[in-house]
Image (cartoon, rainbow, N blue to C red; front, side, top):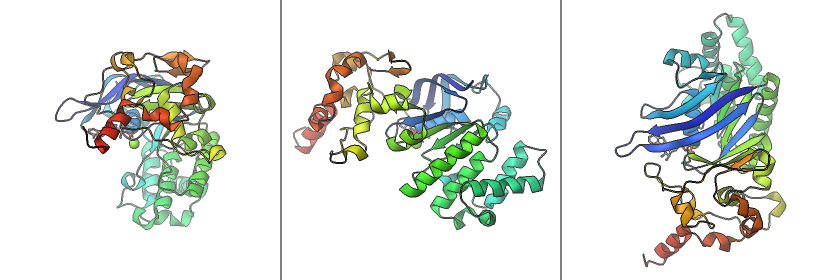
Length: 351
Ligand SMILES: Nc1ncnc2c1ncn2[C@@H]1O[C@H](COP(=O)(O)OP(=O)(O)O)[C@@H](O)[C@H]1O
Ligand SMILES: [Mg+2]
């Protein structure tokens, strides 16, 4: 069963000039019990996408077009009051910064109990307290610490408290935005395992946002690679990381350490994602792409369906196998892009 169906979604931010097209024509679905990863560099629209889904965009952010169907209801069409009913209860979010999402003036227990009592009006105090203890246990926190205030917790503990809160109402969809970046690697591993276990107990679906490719490889069934507000490539985890077609995915993968090939130098993709208030005309990645041609700079790529269940937004997806994937391991390949040439000419001072 499809839990979430996002169709041609556009989420913009008002700015002084043209709106920033933070999410621009994004479509995907999440099935019941499925984990989907969203990866991409900073500024590509990942957090905006999650905020639009749960309905917590800031005032200057708005859905410009498209739909977000949750269990068959288009959330972009319902009233504010109705929208609030979905929050925490049906869709919850583990936010990028746990400190900002926990209220400093209430104890952790008060906050979780309040969420439970708001969304499950019949629940008695004792039962709510039991849920708090149970959730604390689950995420590896001492239930006796539930009466602490957020500032009495370390960063890692706050992150765990946030996870406890996000899972307390057994939502059908959990949005986890960089859930473990504040944690060290060992704790990150424990927490991800925990989330996975809890999740399979309550059969929820999860969207995991991260810039860390290894987190997705460990926890997700499918991956969406986002670039500059759009989907560059989407498909099963093994295929996206085993045999990607989009040059951006290929580069991104090589930019992360690989335990099997620890002798390799990490690659860096020269340049930055484009300005979203004035994105380039053709493929948004063209400037940083070693395969780019004039066609890429002028024509927006459409979806190429590769294999059973993978789509790539690259004009040359069919030709990647023939050579680019092999050449992409070589840093020289990535030195031959518009962005890399620009960087060199700035460094040489001859711009
Ligand atoms: N409140 C805002 N007002 C204007 N622009 C914003 C706002 N929040 C985010 N943006 C812009 O939207 C784009 C996507 O941001 P974000 O969704 O946070 O990306 P990510 O989570 O992938 O790092 C960025 O270019 C960012 O500058
Ligand atoms: Mg973000």
